[in-house]
Image (cartoon, rainbow over all chains, first blue to last red; front, side, top):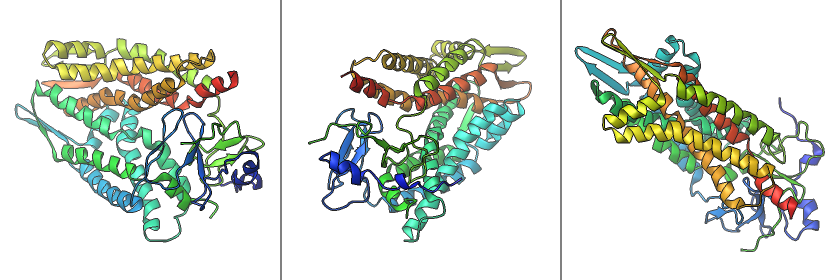
Length: 233
Length: 209
């Protein structure tokens, strides 16, 4: 699957466009005296990155966030990713809701819920819930670990780490645990009319997981990671 | 801040979708990959308008059965009750749970509908080369990307109810056919938002100047 970079692709815009424009264009790691330029993903305008990476940079034309500084990015996101993996295991091993009605007690975990949908001939929905609430978040977390651990240990990037990171970023919109949490809350109130509902351990670990995972992702510094994971190295 | 007011396209550069590396425009588009991250390179998302239109039309088709057919079928003590999304909302309003009625109405009816309207508006504005408030239109696009996922709430509620409420003869809840259509609406509109390229909003303005 891997296509080696073709010769005309393997150098950046630096060399040729500099002669045509006053702006020297490079997105490579900080080269002293040479401003870094990035194209806005939302409107394509070229924006100059500041010399010191301390502030958040917005596109001057459309306001998209182009760059955010993240101190200790690798340490922080690694710690938060490990924490979210632990919470993820907790969330999937305990029931999140139990319903008491008369003599019955009905408990459900995320996986039994999905299994129940499957048994009701709703395989499509079962797969969708499995993907968005279990597999995608799991893939994101293990993917991040795979990328971050070698970087933290100062080793060479893991095999295909750049591709894995691309995948982690691409599946991100499909991880919907926070929406699922909202679903749990709605179901709690909805069933409150019918029976006694007891929130389980999993509800709390799920609640924590959402915040920890969001923090893990927002402490990532993609430009820094791309510099480290560069396929050309 | 002094910025050279040029776009990557005007300088013949391609910005990688995934890692945002700027690369000189490859000569042919086939099988060009980003040297840094290996992603396929294209100056704009491929066939953005056609793909988005197709997905928007599909979502509109799915939106109808999603709202007309029952979402849940509740059987309690011998009675069966089929609820559509709207009848569920009305039930909660009448029983006094305003918050729940609001959450379900906003997530399941309002958000998908407005999202489709915004996408159609953006598609038409690019089609007719509108120069009207490009910054606000770009913000609208970012909004549709952000809120679309929240429509999944109702699907998850159904999942939880189906899994939890199975007390044999006393009460069971089954997922109705609308659940599948509704899930399709959410997934298809997410793909539609993803395939729209907001840079087209700015391209037509630059070309017309």
